[in-house]
Length: 225
Image 1 (cartoon, one colour):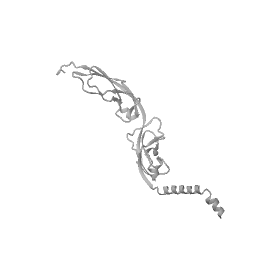
Image 2 (cartoon, rainbow, N blue to C red):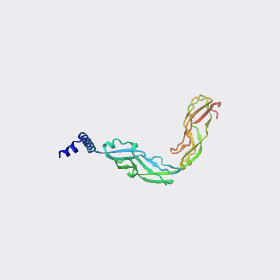
Image 3 (cartoon, rainbow, N blue to C red):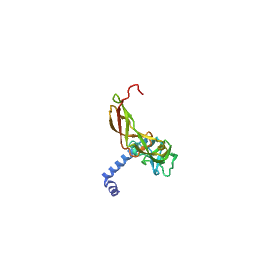
Image 4 (cartoon, helix red, strand yellow):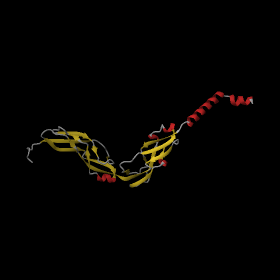
């Protein structure tokens, strides 16, 4: 009996005691770690988007994911740890409703999804289309006494735009950001950007454009049409 006690109990007693203390500490920390529930807002990810297909819905809400798990894990969770994914394989132009449940949520296995808001969402799709449109300048400001605008020039004169086909068809022209030509006498050039009024349509190459304002002396007598 003494041999057994010395061989299996007292041998490396310090290491065994340390292991026991560590195990007890881990058990205690886990046992006292309560379940915690939080809600995190994260952007919805769209995977496997078909070629030449674009989303034509203007506003896509973020997903609010309510998760539950050990407090030590939940408190450290951030947006980049949760991925609500919708698979767009095989989607065609038109409207489609997608379910958003715990099956679409990819995250740590230590927590569980309690609720997803919205639980489903409707999204519109369209073919991607391009076309060229004219660029129209917007000129503001007060001119010197007796001067008026003779001509405005834009370089380049046209821009190629891209976006959902039905929306691209409705765009007749692009405009520049306002150019303040206050005090211009003769000719002055300004560098500015092109603006497309539809948020889902954009320039293919969003390069700056040059607007040249040409003014002339108004020789017309007051009161003479």
